[in-house]
Image (cartoon, rainbow, N blue to C red; front, top):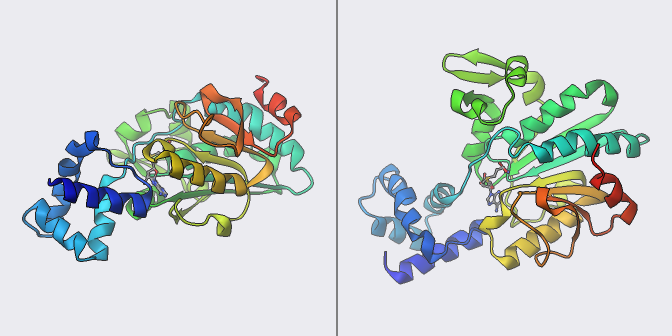
Length: 282
Ligand SMILES: C[S@@+](CC[C@H](N)C(=O)[O-])C[C@H]1O[C@@H](n2cnc3c(N)ncnc32)[C@H](O)[C@@H]1O
């Protein structure tokens, strides 16, 4: 690919998704875009670039979709989910007793496993929040990933990655070679196509936000802007989970670390006592 074309593609990806395409990722371009070339009944990558340069919106959408990194899994990294189960959830059940509402955002939810992992945790504590309104909202730029998530149908490989067998047997039904998530859990998550480059304000305020394994694909400026938006979308004592290797120090001033190693943060507006409560192992 010519350097000009690479730059054009990198600019398009950044504008539309925030994704930064660095030169060392050049090898990915051909791997990921040749299937789009074939799908669009074109012959070469050069023809695809011409279609992009001519402003063909449907082609641009396919290209962005093909370049996204969508790897995910149930209870990914395990410990942050245990922290949510044993520390954040009991804390919210105490502090939101009067309002009886609980709102969780999974930003960059991909094929849904993250949102459904939280739904399974909430389900286990169902008696504690009987009479409450609990919402889990999963957003992603990728409509195909969300369509997949909405089916709740996962392969043997996908359920083997991180899902404890007792939860598999409790919440899924075998369907040929795959496993279908039961409606009781599937219905707890609402999935929306949403771009993190856009305003998040219409989604409302959240008590917990997960934005895990999404920020590393953005440059510093985009990370800062996304974190600022997430910070504004959270209640003052809201909790943010980012990925395990995504320290926010030097990236954002909107958050204070509870446990940076596990990617657990609170809003910059939270009181020191809150940090101490959430940091204490239970
Ligand atoms: C690597 S996956 C992470 C999935 C999940 N959060 C996890 O940790 O397992 C990153 C997801 O972020 C989504 N994503 C990337 N840029 C986005 C954007 N600008 N707006 C919304 N979602 C985006 C991708 O489509 C992808 O599904």
